[in-house]
Length: 209
Image (cartoon, rainbow, N blue to C red; front, side, top):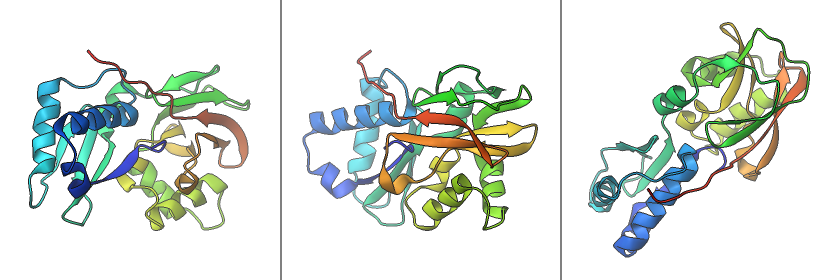
């Protein structure tokens, strides 16, 4: 799930052995959060029980991820938690060398960046900026809007994508062609025109505590 979102069928999940379910949850949480270590076994077991209960799922948060209802009784959407993403990635100067961002994205400058630029999660204000821009704007914005409209990308997950800002103005963002599920995408375009950042993802691992 390179864009930080996946859908879980609770009926299929429930039919597996507990050990298998716990391993799946641990791997999913590591992959979506970018963390190297899984949550404690007790916390995983509590989440497992909640997911296996029949009836409406009320939601949960664990390991830097959110588990939310997806409209269907047996479907749960798992996304990167925005608050955890912000805590792990406070606004920082746009990098002048390759960096691992949020434990999932390898961000590399392509040239043309300015010292006034900062890198941070897209957030709700960035998502609103994307939605309110003209239809003939740059490819990353169009791709994000199309992915959201086609439900290939969850709005909650979109808010945790890396983006570049100049003060309070969004100038660049991650590519949102989630339909291709590619692990290599050119993601940034300076002032939404000239490309100057590239990103590769995900770069994750999962280990036991």
